Image 1 (cartoon, rainbow, N blue to C red):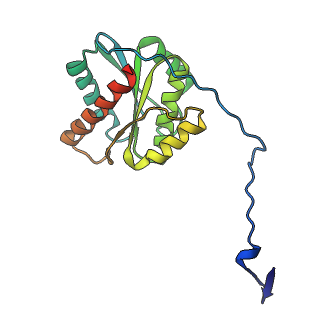
Image 2: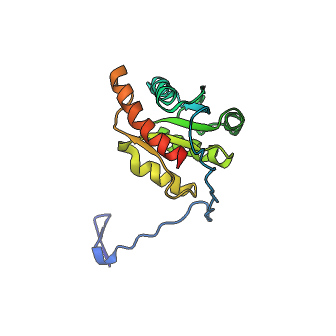
Length: 189
């Protein structure tokens, strides 16, 4: 029951009923099968996809150095997206899948870039390329939600401490090492 008082409506809790509607009128589920894992990284070429956020390129440089020195990758190929908050174009991911055996995508350290970092890794997996997104802990719940929406529940994500953008090289090296430990476990599982 509601009561009008001088043009306003007072709603009592017992009267409150909220309905939510899907604006498109339908939902679509996406099938997801992860790409086969690589087993080991020795001798492989690893792609590094940067979303061009501040320090993303530098973080990926350190990731590549660590993967080469500690895990024996043969080479790394760096590519950049045109827009940090938009998914990578399909042609760009297809090209990466033709040139490398695994992919690391970085960096998710805000809302929209975390979402697209995860989406890019999942899209790469759909091309048969095992991929790992690097996202800061601050955006864990959003990253997991995006993976679920993409049909990839429990998609493995490498999480590092927030922030990335304001770090110096020492801080980036530390984040890169933490990321690499997870990246290796995810790619070789």
